Length: 212
Ligand code: CDP
Ligand code: CDP
Image (cartoon, rainbow, N blue to C red; front, side, top):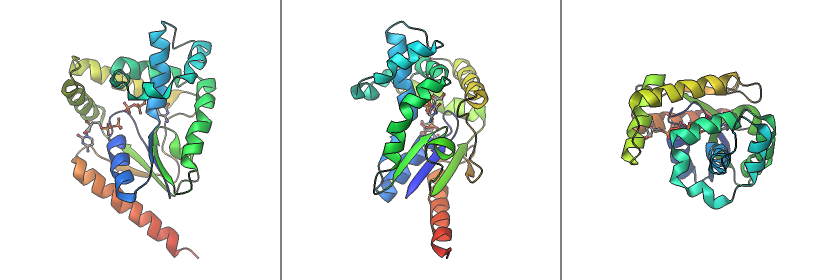
């Protein structure tokens, strides 16, 4: 079973993907971290995220970087949405994600283009959403918990800027796949959102099993 979980920043897609991975015993890949690792490498080397050649050169980052808490910050997120618009960066990270999706037992990936580009054959596709303000409240609380000092207005502005950039880019823009199920988590607790996601997976897999 391949499950694709897409959606904008702080919609809750990572939380849902991790919960589904646990529930179904599937390996999980947070694909946003790959773009964040490229962005962090560019920033650390004082290169320019807007220059495609600089961003491509950063695609060979070491795996250990994926564990660095700095990757989760808004500054790196913002740069990630700049590097991720370069077609050559997307191409450089494509095979790694497709290989992950093609594991024999199945897999769960979360990101922006899993259901549309990385795994269009996925058995279940969720597109998780929530209003920008609610997403900003969640991300702000999360960053404060992690000890990063940032204002709510800054986080909201960052989320809006990334939404716009991610949805408008020419290469693999963020959009729900035609066959994705929308899951609005604006007024759902984490538990309720996860329950809803599990119900959708069960519905989808039951519908597939019924087909002749
Ligand atoms: O966790 P959050 O939703 O804030 O961001 P993320 O998933 O870590 O993604 C960071 C940035 O990487 C996004 O703003 C996108 O520009 C980019 N990204 C992408 O282009 N395609 C993906 N499959 C995942 C992330
Ligand atoms: O992966 P993505 O950026 O879409 O979001 P996330 O990391 O799963 O969730 C962002 C924050 O919102 C986390 O701190 C979650 O605990 C929280 N959250 C929430 O408050 N309510 C939900 N229904 C889902 C997530």
